[in-house]
Amino acid sequence: MSYKIAIVGSGSWGSALAQILSDNKHEVLMYDIDDKIVTEINKDHTNKSKLGSSKLNEDIKATKDLTKAIDYGEIILLAVPTAVVRLVLSEINKVIKEPKLFVNVAKGIEPETFKRVSEIVYEEIAEAMIKGYVVLTGPSHAEEVVIGMLTLVTAASNNLDDAKLVQKIFSNKTYFRVYTSTDLIGAELCGSLKNVIALASGMAYGLKFGDNTLAALITRGLLEIKRIVLVLGGKIETVYGLSGMGDLIVTCTSHHSRNFQAGIKIAQGKNLKQTLSEMTMVVEGARTAVAAHQIIKEYKISAPIMEGVYDIVYKQKDVKKAISKLMSRSLKPE
Ligand SMILES: NC(=O)c1ccc[n+]([C@@H]2O[C@H](COP(=O)([O-])OP(=O)(O)OC[C@H]3O[C@@H](n4cnc5c(N)ncnc54)[C@H](O)[C@@H]3O)[C@@H](O)[C@H]2O)c1
Image 1 (cartoon, protein in one colour):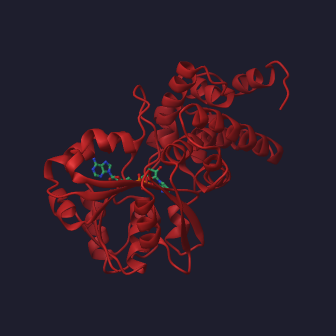
Image 2 (tube, helix red, strand yellow):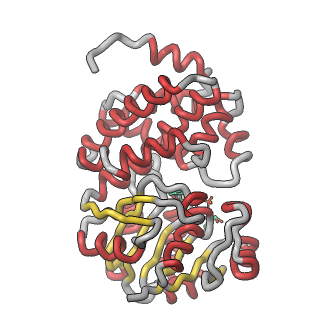
């Protein structure tokens, strides 16, 4: 069965997901506020600033008209940076006329409120207009997906039937396979928090640390993610699954990762403003580092790597001094 899907946000991930959906014979209408991107997708079937020369299927269309996109989609796929999710949802709420299934792929936690995107959806969209909510998350760089490299992710929802529907729509037999989960909290938290550890990993790479350091960061970073997930109600299996360990590994080791790249720039002495101004795509870890710092304080969780990242990024602490502080902590059992 073919579905009509509106993709809100035509950046690198929105475009790669459009390609999967089109390959799977669904009908796609993309939406973005950026005129240039919309025109380029319609005219040249590319999104060069986000995905280089990769070609998108010709049946993928884009629009700048939000009402048209929302009317079109039976399913609304959210692919905008989390910093604008609340704003975009409030705009959607003004134009949505019938209940739709919301699928989100943005990864982040809102500072101050500690809200996950699912919670923001239920705050901003009238309840009668929400058929359900699913997060699609896991180790998946757009640059690889768009050229058909084999990728596995998780569709998590409080409603297993909704997760199964998303699994069916996105999976194919060649390069994209989706697993289901009912641990929405765990999947959303893991996908967001791994970006903070990726910043640390980029910093270590920028300072020319080796593979031992990277392995240590991933292992101890996963432990910090686990502590937060368990305190906030997520499940341990999720931490060790695709949306947890899987996504952490890819984001800490891949040069496609924007958070990893941003970490390298910070290690080279650039401040956050300079770093973000040099990135062409969103660096979610910078914002989630604030939320993580607040959560760690509020719930008294031990997460020294995430705290180190916060100090470096927001308190201008020297990276080497932050590492020295980490290494000088009291010795403890694993
Ligand atoms: N790129 C990936 O490989 C990847 C993979 C998995 C998850 N994600 C997540 O997906 C989300 C989007 O990432 P991305 O890489 O596609 O980012 P991106 O920077 O490439 O694209 C974001 C898009 O959102 C659009 N946008 C910004 N504000 C908007 C608004 N108010 N209304 C409509 N459109 C708006 C921008 O014009 C841009 O086209 C992030 O949370 C990211 O963590 C990305």
